[in-house]
Length: 269
Length: 90
Image 1: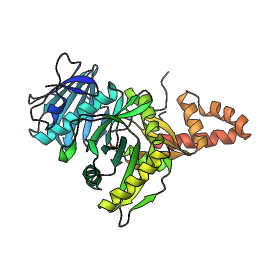
Image 2 (image 1 turned 30 degrees about the horizontal axis):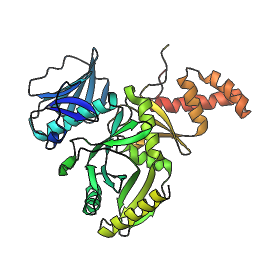
Image 3 (image 1 turned 120 degrees about the vertical axis):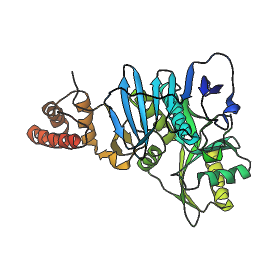
């Protein structure tokens, strides 16, 4: 299926369905391609240039090959061939393909689309665009739900693309939207980031810029060799936004207090 | 010229902190972030420009009004730490 994401046309041809891909359906010529196959992949006798606990990276001519591991077992390979990303699915299930295809779109965003992926749930309410970020399980989606119950629209509940456009950070959705499959084909300039934590009472904490930076680092990919300058500019832009560290009980009163604070700050901007 | 500083890291200045951060990782481990002070950041930048410890010491002694020999010793100690962390190679 040819889709348009972040103003780029991509042919995404996967074995399993990504639930909301249809929302981004397009037609015509495409420049980028993500394809998936169950073909057997033979890794020549290459030496990895990068190893971490769940992947190994190899280089063959100008192709980067990613060997994806799960508990030490190879579950698939990804070949990054310029604007084509080819997934070889060894572990034949939808979740594995979802994970590997997420790496594929991440690569295209970072290398060609001028952005990064941000693990966050992002909503728009009254023309204010707010990102909730926190380690998984903290309550990003719960907070998003409270906002949506009060009229907000969610751009993406899990993986948002942040693209630098005319010196603004613009949030674009991706169809990779986590377990709730919630994403809408809309984009908006990002205004604020809320670092959520769970607390008995709803309270804002002071946050130093360096601490905010470390929290952001845990929710984005680090810079790659090919996007260091852009990555730096995007991260700096994120740190220029309104930043909130908010401990909350995730009840409706937590929404009320946060919304009131953000609206006040926005009005006084 | 082969640079002894690894290209797999970047120096980031945020607020009043300086950090050397790895690149090409999808998940950061906070213990891989190396917090350094302003002087160390200056040394790191000069190492990235290809200067050696002696050359950096000669530059720094003008600014810091310090003995270049002592500065060179401190710089070599910092380089030792960078080596331990895989940021600098002989």
